[in-house]
Length: 310
Ligand code: PPS
Image 1 (cartoon, rainbow, N blue to C red):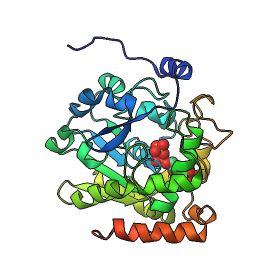
Image 2: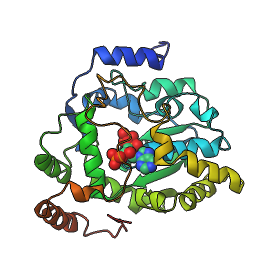
Image 3: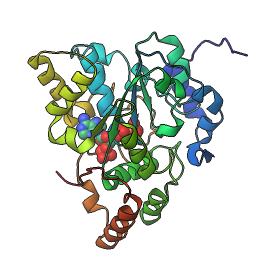
């Protein structure tokens, strides 16, 4: 039976979260490890029915989600910076599978309060995305980031986010990543799953490295995919507003609304470096060699043009 509860405001959700956080354990759904607050609500999440006009932004964690969310929100609002500061990213763009108690408001609760067309975030691998997105032919933007930088970013995030499983030492973390034992599972399966379906399902497949190298070009690609047409001066403004430097200082995108007891910014800020190639100062030569050999094996069946430097 449907519960007719008032959705929690995000400030209520945050205070509730701050008093009820711990590093949530992982439980597998179809072989994909997810945090238990997701699996507890799995039947509701997988039954979610989007509207055909809804847009899904899908990523493996730490691949450039927030960046793409901000670009999309600005494109949809004619580059109006003030409108895009109406609320934190997680409130403007619900995170589909997020459930209380983590600090971000429940995606399903927020979606009930919003009329389509909505922009929705997910980290789910393609096989776990609710069927309704495909049945309704929703547009999907997928953003992928090279494995080594993605891993480094996830490592810092797992250390600072007190709701994610304990990352453990760096050397062991590399192995967890390679074996797909982190929340939302295998990076390798994730990037391959969306890549293989991109034509069939009209998915716009983007790379973090391309956005970093030429943000204007990639913003225009997103604009065309969304069937929008904005003048040059607005595109230039969006390029500027979504630079790392500007987003880092924007409280509506930099996740500083999450209390330090949950996102411990003394360990790492959410907007950490935003670079391509930061992996090089983290991997030892031996770790890099071992990782590359395993990468070649795991990615042998597909040719995705990832770049670890630009
Ligand atoms: S999350 O938690 O999965 O939603 O994180 P996500 O937003 O996917 O990834 C966070 C990383 O993206 C970087 N980032 C940016 N880089 C460059 N330019 C801009 N504008 C930008 N916005 C976010 C952010 O710094 C994280 O990467 P690292 O390498 O940790 O700095």
